[in-house]
Amino acid sequence: MSVRIWRVCEYSGGWLNILVDIGMCARGRCGRSGGRGHGRAPGGKGGPGLAPPPLARRGRAPASAALSARPAGPGGCGRSPQAGMAAEDEAELSLLECRVCFEPYGPDGQRRPLNLPCGHVLCRGCVGALAGAERQRLECPFCRRLCGPAETSDCRPLLQLLELLGPAGGGLASALGRSGGGAAAAAGLGLRLCLGGWGSLVNPTGVAACPGSGRLAVAHDGKKRIHVFGPSGFCLRRFGERGDASNDIKYPLDVTVTSDGHVVVTDGGDCSVKAFDSEGRGVLAVREGFCLPWGLDATPGSEVILTDSEAGALYRLAADFQRGELRKCQMIRSRLVSPRAVAVCQTSGAVVVVEHLKARGASRGSTRVTIFSAEMDLIGQMDSFGLNLVFPSRIYATAVAFDKEGRVIVTDVCSQAVVCLGKPEEFPIFNPLISHGLCYPVGLTYTANNSLVVLDSGDHSVKVYSSS
Image (cartoon, rainbow, N blue to C red; front, top):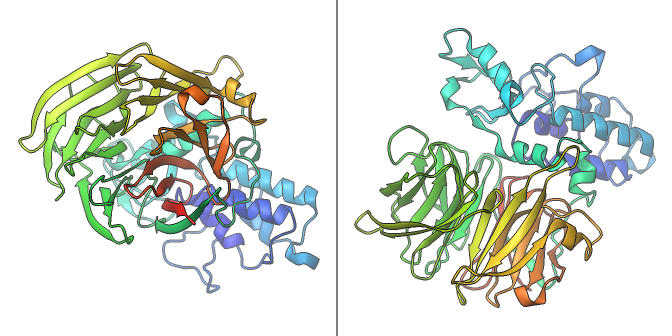
């Protein structure tokens, strides 16, 4: 128990899994006793890549050490509910603060969380301090791997979590729910395949299915930014190096696959849209006036609909990907509020967008699901307040898709679920499709055989569900 919690606190990989373990123990469901000391490998000795933990602030023991120090009692969990909640609060502090300076992370400035290439997370201030005045190389304080400050990148899942909690704060458990995880429980769906995991995928941000081959393309923060998986789950190809070349990918935000098999990626690092052929060769890079291109989806005619989060706009991009020629990049909708996820209905051509509404004062931000017809007329809209009238819980949508019947499907990180909102004319409908087994769902797509694919950034995996 103590080892896993320490690894989750120190690594960006699987950081939301801490809620599952602590939540189960707080309820007396954990069958494992506190055992090995802080930072020890499962074999009882320090394992490779596990550095000693930093000193606790103000004499406070790290969360996992506090947990492992308690002897196990009857029921396999040696602490009262009050002690369990205290341990959960302690672990939450460890998750939301830099493990070098012990200051809380923030969305901007020196407190902004950054990923090192090794997977550890530090605040920007500590990255600068460790790099020194010359800012050439720094050594990770946990695994001692060397890297340059330019090799760091934003820890997007943690930034999204900070955005979810909002300026008013609030606990992780209250924001993400206390469902405790477990086996997937879906309405008519069963978990068929699970791909990736920490080490294979690092902070994944987007997933898309190839209409013809059934392959899955996943965008993540690893050395090779795009992984392509076959229908059986094997990784067939990796491409998209991190770098400054025209076809390198600095930070992928989303990915889609056209009907002719081209992989198109939004790159938040240089605010561009980049296309690759089925072999991973770059064929096109578009940088026409984007502020922050974010979500994208392909139409049946191999055009691409994409959002610009900072410009508040929706674009239609048409290109001859075979020749690497851009034909048109047209703004088709403006005055949206921080649009991110987007999906195109393959039958009607309708477009659905998830807008992220700004927080006001001490209130937290919220989301709005907006649907347009193929001619870009507004045909439906539902915000978090309206959804709360149907479902008594705060809903924060992070991804969206259409099923084959034209129903709108969203991921909700508050309840860690996938929810069907129905067709636009049926709003509001709340039908949970997957209610257990997800940590932090951030991506969603359907395959040609109608399997539901969920990208779970919480445990760095891709989960494929099909009718049982």
